[in-house]
Length: 539
Figure 1 (cartoon, one colour):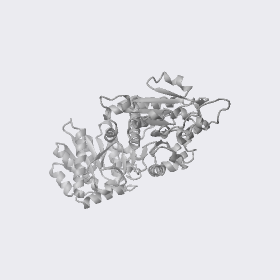
Figure 2: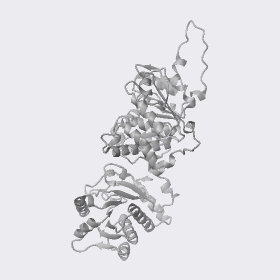
Figure 3: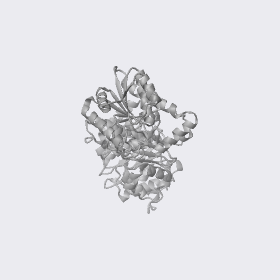
Figure 4: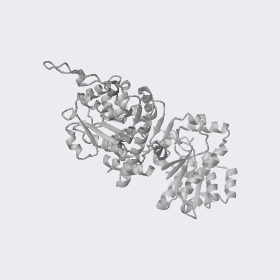
């Protein structure tokens, strides 16, 4: 699903109109698409009724087209006109058997119609609205809200046409009179305000319908921002042929953990397996092995030199010996920020090791170790998370030392450490910040938080349309990093791995909260355990 500003959408429609797809044709396509969504929702029911709030603009026209299509499908339909003249679309609606709610006590008639209706189409205001609302419209929306509240469980399904009336589709600001939708059917592309708070709380489920735009339309092709959805993510996932073996799905090597953060390695490793990696190897400080091995029999292990349970600066050479068979490498979960671990990371990125740097031994005859070949020293495709990012920020010219298109997964605090921007600056302009630094660094940036963003150096941007407190819990970031490295190990490119991993992670958070009945009780392990359900539903 394309993600656009209001101005971008207007430019797209204008270009389409000048190229032969007229505004009237787009309206017909939009209205029919809206009607098709409603018909699919109620496919097994009969004797159904719809009421439309019909404004003067294009979304009011979309609503009239949809109501007419519902009439033709056997529904009963009524329209309440809000500052709209009885134009050709109204005439066509009435000729098809629709009723315009008008005359004395029109609002009372609307209230009665809402009590009988199965669906309310909110087509009062469109994407170009500016707040605050004019008094007459604000009062109408407030009164409709009062009626819907009084109906409680018998209220009709509220379907917003393109956007809930009263939402600023650029900023995400919302008029207090806005009618909360159960479903928003938006036309051609997602308007960016719909996936911002507080508007997102009024959107309900979000669906996009086709309005017939030519896919090669230059203004449409110029839009590089998207919203992830089940269908697009499913298309990214690798096939799993019957003749596959563990090597088919790659090896994820995960260097993680310290005595203070033992569970990070376990969560990341299990997530890599759950998303389909063929083999997961955990590289952990040696003292952690005893605590973890019994909980994770499917893993293989690399025991790293340590200092007081934290990865030692001498560990780079031990880890590098495992690169030859590694399909993707994750660094950082649970590292801690000790200086010794920073030296380990610095040496790893530089291709050096403690053994290479050690002074010659005196009094023994020994064979000099031959230098490693370039292939042996080469870092695998890389994901860096958590404390790994904080340590990375302390290394000079770190971006140039990573393999091309490495994946960085900062939350706003870690992004602040990497960029020097305040968390407030980052949160106020998340899209621009993610895109700027993805391009500047040459790597894929996963800016976590409500509506996680994935930005690529070439300007592509994908938004994950989920904001939930279910993921506001320690360890969920380790699960996300494990999902991403597991997908990367299976051969997905960096951007696809990040998009698919972030979407699966967000959905797993929603599934876990639904299973438990509350977001407050969700643990990172619950998110991990929901991954299989998410994958099952999109296969």
